[in-house]
Image (tube, rainbow, N blue to C red; front, side, top):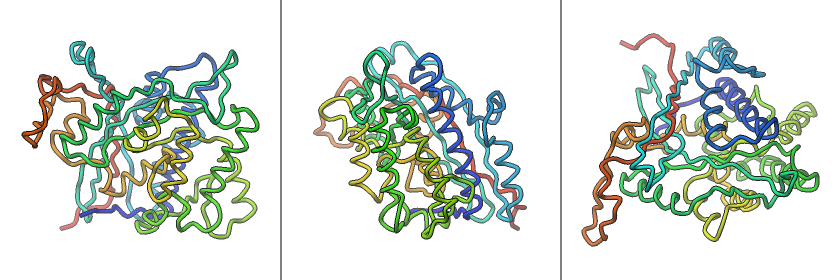
Length: 351
């Protein structure tokens, strides 16, 4: 049974503004100074989110501000975020590459109860082309590895961890794209997010069901009748996109079936799969994943894996499936980092 943690519009707006600000900060790093690698971007993402290190960076809307605004709410909610880095076994790394990030989503509430779910995330960055490293619609995620995607698919199947493996795409803001392509990107965002919201936003119906479709703090302002100020804020937000995006494993595998995934192919997948987060903004996806048990797995071994602990590959249930060298691994490769995100109630205990 799918459970939902009900987020009111105010609380969702606070969390969205913080998470989207993190997305923009990481995205801007791609166009400032030397070109960072995926490992550097992932470490920066975790550092910006972590309560112990986020203050090292200047953010327009900090975690401290988000916590202070959440305290003003009657819902009694706060968010705790922490990350840790794991060392890799060279023997394991020589054959299989672990995910870049394990995310543990936790809910701790006196009425709705407690839950912990794990997600594995593989990160890839967009590469520019030519001497100027220009970005365009057909820019690709050059480090995408088909064998790595197949390995992640095997992991999900063996652990029965459905909706638990995702790709995180690092993209620069549209202002760094060729102007003609930048206009098309912004039009993509306006098409998906404009007009009637039902059937337009990738998972608007689910967000409405859980009570969180009012981004009162954000720049997107998804209201049925937008004011001029709403539209101006939305235009500013579109200029920061595509920034950080999230796709499920099957979408990443499909767009990378015949070569390196391209940005345009992911936008096309988003249009084709309007009712699921096929190429979702980072803040949207993380809010939805926190609020719905549809995303992530509660399996004890899967959670241990996302936390960076030693875990063996589960045996294949079908005896007819041929044995592979994966079955001989003493332990599976751990994610490079684990990010723990906890939505915690500040209400007094019931009873």
